[in-house]
Amino acid sequence: MKTPRDCAGSQLVRALRKFGYIVQRQTGSHIRLTTQQGGEHHTTVPNQDPIKVGTLHDILKDIATHHRLTVDQLLQELDL
Image (tube, rainbow, N blue to C red; front, side, top):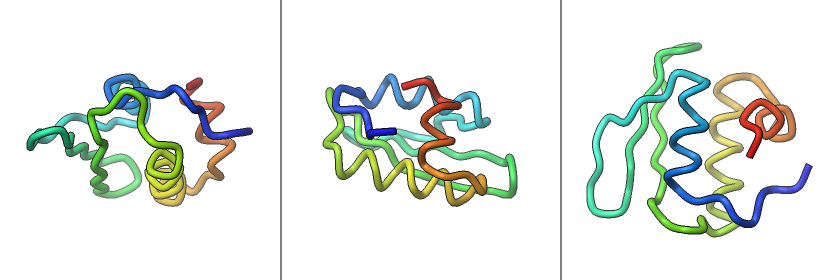
């Protein structure tokens, strides 16, 4: 599955709620998310529309690794 080209930061934040991510804080245009599922994990999402493809792929790869999924499995779960 290809990385979406039109995913906004706010859309990704909403989708990540499925994995227990909550907004911890926001500094400028960066949103810091935290989850306790599968152990504590933090990630930062830029509040851009759209998020650059490489940046989005790196964020998804980090989250997929934490939850022991592939990026394709994560994208199917998030339905982006």
